[in-house]
Amino acid sequence: MRKLNSLNIIILALIAVAMAFSLRAQVPKGISGKGIQFPYRDPKSGTLKAIFSGKNARQVTGSQVFITDFAMKTFRNGNTNQIELIAE
Image (spheres, one colour):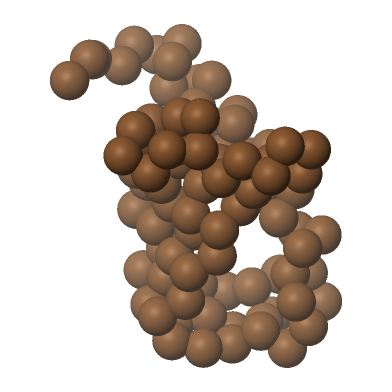
C-alpha cells in the first residue's frame, strides 16, 4: 500500500469536506435508525463515490444528523473493490 504524504492527506480531507457539504442538502426529514448506510453518488454521472455508515443516527436539526461509530469509504471510478480512503 502506498504511503500518504501530507499533501495527499490535505487533498483527501478537502474531498471529504466537499462531500459532506453536498450531503447536507440530501438529508431526508426525520432520519433516525440503527445500522445505517448512505451511498453518495456523483450528481452528474451517478457513479458511486462513497458510502457513509454508522451504528446509530438521529436528526439534530433540519440538515444535521448525529451519527455514532461513523465510517466513510470512498471509491475510485465507482468500483467498490478499489477503495481510496477509509475514515472511521
